[in-house]
Amino acid sequence: KQQESQSKPAFSLETYMTQKIKSINEALDAAISLKDKEPRELHEAMRYSLLPGGKRVCPLFCIASCELVGGTESMAMPAACSCEMIHDAALIQDDLPCMDNAHLRRRKPTTHKAFGEAVAILAADGLLALAFEHIALYTPTAVPPARIVRGIGELARCIGAQGAVAGQVFDISSQRESNVTLEYLEYFHLHKTAAMLEGTVVLGAMLGGGSDEEVEKIRSFARYVGWGFQVVDDILDVTKSSQELGKPTGKDLVDGKVTYPRLMGVEKSREFAEKLNKLALDQLSGFDTQKTVPLVALANYIARRQK
Ligand code: GRG
Image (cartoon, rainbow, N blue to C red; front, side, top):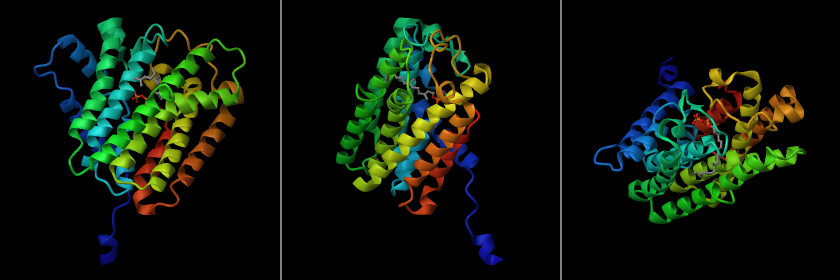
């Protein structure tokens, strides 16, 4: 009995996410305060796109992977905020009239609808630059500078012209392509969606002091999770309305978009998402099982989410 009462309570993803998201939102709020900031409208637009409403998937994974390899939340928090800044910069651009032309995101007008196109583009530039400034200046001194430099390099590579930017280019071309194959979908989702998550977790693991072998396992884990995220996203697009999902609405270009359910049907897509989740979890098999609990729970949440 005494032993039972002393044993650790079961892990609750809900409690974990609530606590971490609260800290992440507070850190983001502080990172982008409006105090003494000019031009005012630009900073308001940056804040507008950054503040609450999103699932905070990138920051959660960044912190969890840092903790998996023995690091702490505070070591990863500035980097976690930076990953959210980059994610939100990409969302601003993705919603622009020249891309998806979305009117609503996170149940609010998209940034270009609220602030105009020019300010929205500049707010995305501002967020992207601030992201790198923020990791460089605010990562605690407990993290050796060499880890920070390596992590920044990885993150930049994953979101750049060999990563998320390439994925976005392929996404746009796929809307004009009549013969989109599964291989093509895999390529652009690994770049467009998975690369951002890859950069996020690799950065977290590097800051936490993960060995090269650990970092590579976590990288591989993130690629499967990110890929699965997109498969589930495609399934939810056909099974739920945009309103229910709080997803961007008013998109011009999605109608002709090739998705997993279009190519393999909803049931097979669900099986495929489960398979990717299993492959993701397999990558964590060499780690201490206790320490993998948050990442495993986050991966299951991505694979089984309803929004
Ligand atoms: C690196 C700034 C930058 C740009 C790269 C525009 C672009 C080029 C890439 C687009 C990448 C993109 C928008 C991918 C979609 C990623 C995705 C899964 C979005 C939905 O994310 P959720 O559901 O959104 O996590 P919330 O609102 O919860 O944060």
